[in-house]
Length: 325
Image 1 (cartoon, helix red, strand yellow):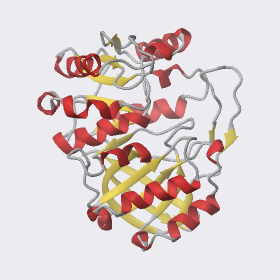
Image 2 (cartoon, one colour):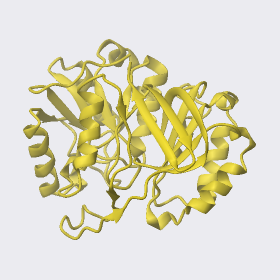
Image 3 (cartoon, rainbow, N blue to C red):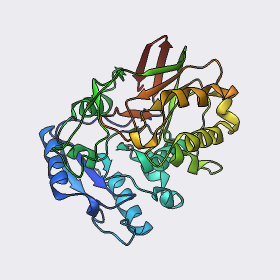
C-alpha cells in the first residue's frame, strides 16, 4: 500500500514516538522548519512532542495520542518523527493499526523508529520510509544528498537510484554546525556479487531484532534486507545480531543484503565485514553490498520499507534501484 505522494501545500506533522523534541536545540529546529517550509510544506507538531520525563521521552499514552492524531487528522499528509531513541517498541501493543490502514500516510524516520515501521508494514502493508527525522532537516551543511533522496522517495512514484554520495561525515554536527569534516566517499563495497530483486525490509538491525518472536515482525521471504547500526555496535555485536536474524525460518529466502555505512567509533572495517558475511553459509550465492548511504552517518538515502529494489553487484561496481510500485 503506497500513501499519497507529498506535494507543495501539504501539512507535515512532527511527532515524538521515541525521544522528545525537548532534547533538540532551538536553532536546529528553526532550520528544519524553514527548510520544509521552503519546499512548500506546512509543519505542525504533536501536542505532546515537547513533553519529557527523566528518560527524555514521555508516557505511552501521550505518545500514542500524538501518533493516532497524526494519522486521523485529514489535513496531515506526511508524518516525520523528531528523532530516534530506545523505546518506540513500547507503543506496539497500543497502536490501532486499523487507523493506519484506513488513513495511509507518508511516515518517515530511522534508528529506533524501525520498530514502528516494521510493525506497520507487517500489520497493514503500508510502505513507510527509513529516512531523515525532522531533526535531520536541521543539518546546516552537507544535506543536499539526503534532501534529494527524500524528495525522490515521497513526492513521486518513479524509480530512483541510491547512488554513492561524493562525500560523507561522522561529525557530531548537532553540537557544532560549523565544525564539519567531510570524507571522500570511495563508493560502495561489493562483498558478494550477484543480481537480486526483492521487497525492502530492514532498518536499524538491533531494533529490528526486537520484533523477533512477536506478531510485529515482517517476513524476510523474498526480501532485500537492508541493515545498519550505530556507534554502540561493533564487529562482534553486528555479527551476533545478524546471525540472530538469519535464524528466522524465512531468512533462507533473503535475496540480497545492503549494509549501511558504520560510524567510525564502531571500528567495523571492510575486512571484518567480509569475514562476517563469508562465514554465513545462509548467505552464499546472494549479493551483499556494504557502505551504502544509509544509517547513522551523513548523508543518507530514504528507503521505502515494503518497496521493491533491484540490486546488482559485480567487481567494484554496484547499482541499487528502488521501485516503489
